[in-house]
Image 1 (cartoon, one colour):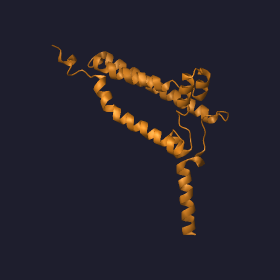
Image 2 (cartoon, rainbow, N blue to C red):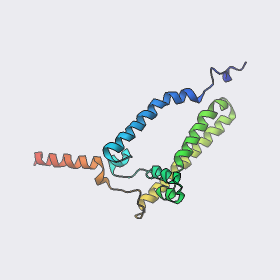
Image 3 (tube, helix red, strand yellow):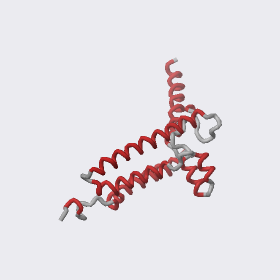
Image 4 (spheres, one colour):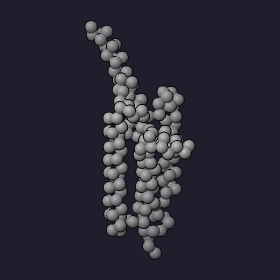
Amino acid sequence: MDHNHSPENENTLAPRLKKALPAFGIIALFYLALILLTGYACPIRLLTGISCPGCGTSRAWIRLIKGDAAGAFRAHPLFWWPAAAALLAAADVLLFPRFSGKPALKRWRLFLKAATFLLVALILIVYIYRMADPSDSVVYFRPETGLIWRLAAKAKAALSGIIF
């Protein structure tokens, strides 16, 4: 009997998902609290006042679900990237045990690295373009609205009263 493919050694998805569920729950609660307490869904935007590369992705999916594909594209032209990343991750989890020790594993890993690099490059290119486009109403660069800037300004004001 081939022990590498026995049920005991099979790398199944169910136990890994069961272990990950508490983390997903904590992340969901964090974002819910963030939205309810601050009105922001993005911790990067809250802290820095600068839109992150994924800014608009959630709005894009909501628009797509409502049937507004053009609106989804306007909210974020690469709104499909989380689905693509999830598919790649799921394929890796599901296919990795079947490729174990085979030459196909090296090809799969090379493909996965290339796909990840391409996805990250596309996201960064679109982000830079959107940040440079003054007509883009989704992303913005306003560090003075970020929590870090505001706290630094308050600290500076408090210290200037003490020092001077």
